[in-house]
Image 1 (tube, rainbow, N blue to C red):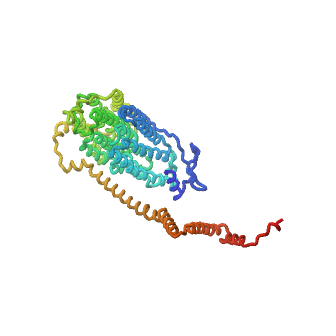
Image 2: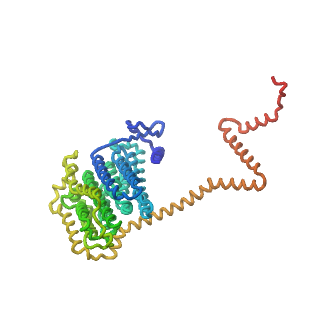
Image 3: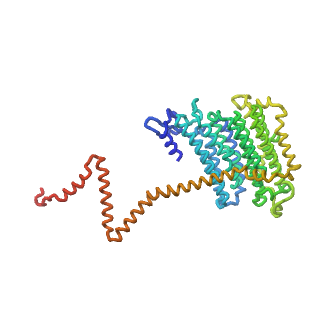
Length: 593
């Protein structure tokens, strides 16, 4: 369908001038008699794609191992593993694509497999609705992506990443940003991400860590030329998204939903890092985030299984004694998420904040500092509600809770190792010698230009947030208005559901009134009704043979009248010949020679 739409777009506008001269597969899509569009399918590796492929393969392998135990009792285990493998395959196709067409193929494949995975338990109504919501919201990004491709083709631009001309058509940048915002859950198009938690926990880990949400960010890495003019707007979007998700996560009680909103907040940080002109710093935080976020989700799955599928944190507590290793790793992941010194999140998050301060983006800087404060606050809140205090749920579940099997613990221990050491081990690759520009990057410049007090400000905010919650947060009284506002996610879900409901109702009315109404009665239903009524009319009067004779005669006459002038013959000449042959005297057989 995409290629049909692509050809339709080419026929409507000016066709591609020149095209791509070298084809990997030798396939050419003919657009006109004198022009063609060459599309090559291949592998294109650079600094961004090589690193992302390594991250995707590492986390996907660990999630596959974890799933063999987590979904081991499910009769559709192999179907689930097949979906996971297909998900990874399409993500790799997206990462190694040499042009926007192959990237779009991986983009669509990731969206399809995410729908299958979120809706894996098809008997759950909540999973059905969440998967459908994710699919519909991501259609917005797909439409914007296609629109941008049509503009590039119409303006004679090549679709290869390495062959973009210096004259770039306007309007493509905002379309790419909109597509990335839908896939990476930025504010306004974020509502599908928390609802995707209705799928199995391994799916949540893979979607939030290395695949689905990173696809939109990778599109920005490939569309740097088009987004250059709107970087400030992109930074504003990321800062507001980070602050919004942090405030909402404070008032959630579903364990997986809290971690999901923290993903949305960290995606805002990644977009902000990209907006300051440092895609390497953005990719650095993306990799750090992938490991500790996969760790948190898989640990949440272990807690949920230990408590007989309980996800409400208000019915947890007291797990520190029965699950000490799980608690330790959860603490490591939470500290890395909050940017605690010398853990993975610290190296990239502090570099982002220092760069914002050094460049003077004050609103985005204070929004991100506030988001960092909120991250520490809800991380401590989650640890206290899940592992601290006394059991608040069923005593039977608490007594049966214990550490998971050795394979699952081995997976989370490996992720815990990366959550601690990945930031330190890969720091120079992203901020130093691994770059073609040497050390002249915004993160390193800010590191030497920003004062020590500014560097320590995020740390003090994080420590202060944890201290405030431990000392007085348990008894902190919030206004009912603010609690309702934040717990209802700023009203975005209400607006989104209302808009979607109105659009779907209008679409249904249009479908029933036009497609199944006017055109149906004018087309097959009307023709069927006419024939049936005519048949009943002639059959009741004993004229059945006359009815069919009249129909066939009319069909033959219309065919002759319509075809004969086109071939240069007088319309009724064949009938005249039949008449002459019928009335002409025949020669007796005895006179024939």
